[in-house]
Image 1: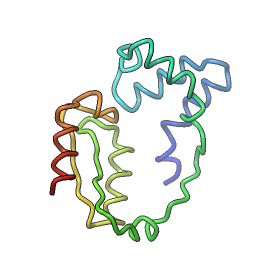
Image 2 (image 1 turned 180 degrees about the vertical axis):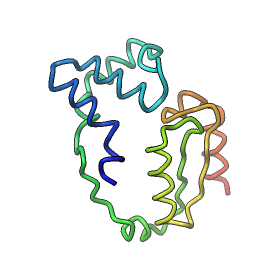
Image 3 (image 1 turned 90 degrees about the vertical axis):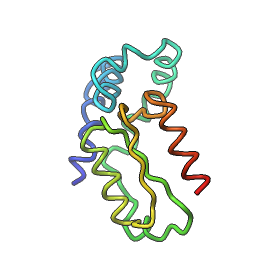
Amino acid sequence: TADARTTGRRRPATFFEQGDIEGGLEFYFDDANGPGTWKRRTEAERQVSRDNAWTVVAGEGEWSVTCDEVGSLRMPVLLMGGEKSPRRLVNVVDATHKCLPSAKRATIPNAAHAMNRQNPAAFDAALVKFLLD
């Protein structure tokens, strides 16, 4: 449901509405990637997130892509997810794969949503394998 898909976005919006951008971003990053993720980011990474905080809640509840639209893709597609990703994000990959069964899948071990940062070697290997197959 839309509620399940946007749960992680609704809470940051509550923080943002109260003027607590930092708290909203911490909730968002920790929710998607595990506790302490926000604090482990470098100051430069946190600043980029602050500068773009609106993207966390932009389009909240607006999921306008249909399964038929996804299924109409005619190019190779790689669906990637992290082994430690929250269930709601795994559900998005699962639903997308049902709409596009020809897509390849890769699950990056020891990583959550920020898999390219949390396990860059495995992320790169999965991507290169997909591109070379």
